[in-house]
Image 1 (cartoon, helix red, strand yellow):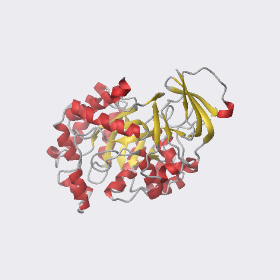
Image 2 (cartoon, rainbow, N blue to C red):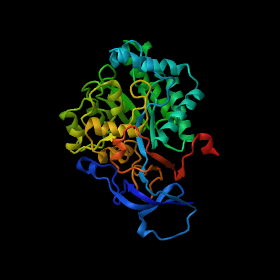
Image 3 (tube, one colour):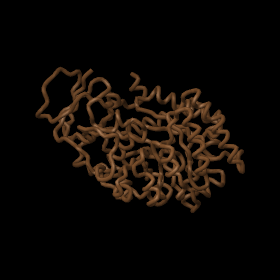
Image 4 (spheres, one colour):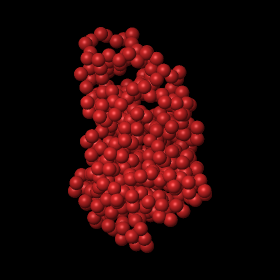
Length: 420
């Protein structure tokens, strides 16, 4: 089936010589075509160009995009959207002055979510997560990485990962799954962290691998959580099953998480609020994508990652939402763009590249997602009539999404309509 989108005011994110990601000053290059057309064949981009160069050919469907811009869908490479219940009481605790670590020590945070998840069925988790997926798609996101990490036992981690597998099977969005058993130490292992790490290595990782439930493994390598040595052990154990590493690093302190991630050839290291010259030196010439989560810094009132310093040092950066119930309860990537520009001084071009092609790389899908290239997946969205690209992060609460296309099809108003 051929679908023609014509009279596009501006076709954004075009690549003629595709790159797996953009870095340094190249991040500010966002190629576009004014007055353009895009031809979709089945689920992928067939071709595109200037309207004046369009040669009439039979198509099955035409969409007039006059006054609208077209962009590749956002790729959200860091979320925790399979969870049971919100944590707004902790939100109040934060307002009253408690820190993230203080709330965690009182049994809140990740342990709070683990307790609730244990009491929730797979079906309930699936239904609530699919609502969040639907919400994210409507905000323009077409690919989502989802982590476990609220199970903290073999049984409950597998439960979460099976839910993510169901989401892969039922959602038109591209979904990647990450095993994050090393998200926190469960209460029953208090004072016995080494035993919990041993259990992850000996029991959890083999069980996850046996069912083929994880594309990646992640570890929260930070102050008060898992050490560099423990992280290294877990990543090496997962590598024996060909599970690729990612890292939560340097959200709370200079933890060494970035360095151990680079040494283990992690696809990404995420958070990075505490990043200095040593960390940037470690990332230079590596295959590891620094991934910034400004929604968490915003919600927790923390310092933002030094995006400007990273980019000016020649590094790439990706952006993701960190959508989770405790520290970033939003999957709105447009707002993430705004935070990147307002708080981290990224240009709109840099922010859009960070949320598309670079975040696609951080999910391992940049060959098929994240930019407008013939042959890539037709996951794109049309804006409403907006004056400029810069307007997208500038108008930080405005709904600028008109139509989302996933796999070449218009995304419906509900999953029921999509199925119909």
